[in-house]
Image 1 (cartoon, rainbow, N blue to C red):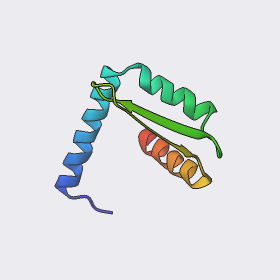
Image 2: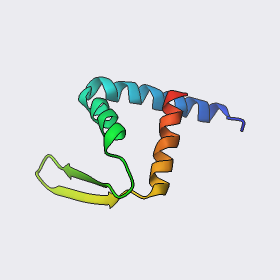
Image 3: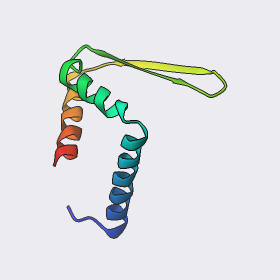
Image 4: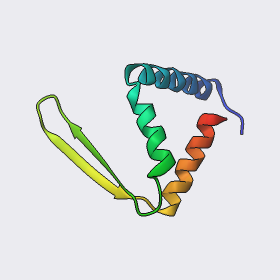
Length: 81
């Protein structure tokens, strides 16, 4: 697969954004690492809650399926490779 300059630029921008995110939120990657080693398995429930500055809450969850775990493994491989 050949990449054009726009795609390469977007990947570089994404990489920079991820580095800034890690610097701004140093505990979050540690949390993700711990969760990925122990808790991510078929049937586990992942819940996400977002609270706005005004106090409004949004919450959703999903039960992990085997296909989800395969996607997670692909993303891990991208991060390492």
